[in-house]
Length: 64
Image (cartoon, rainbow, N blue to C red; front, side, top):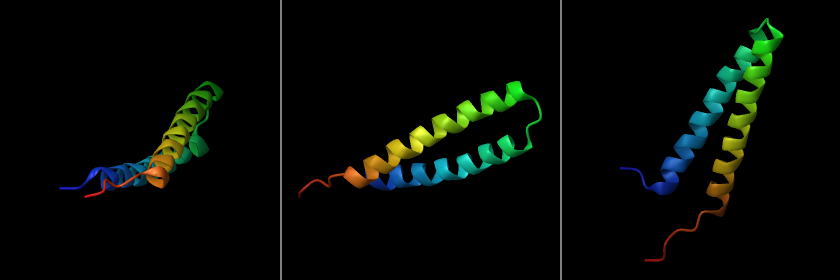
């Protein structure tokens, strides 16, 4: 069973993978309306990646 920080690292990795798929969608979209929606999704994923990375960078292990 993973501990908290391992789960955050896994989530950050999964977000990077999802970001690539959304970027691929953005590169292949035809309608501007859909492009705008996909760009919004990409922005939200970027924010989530930043937040996860900040959590990883600032994570404090408990002292045992």
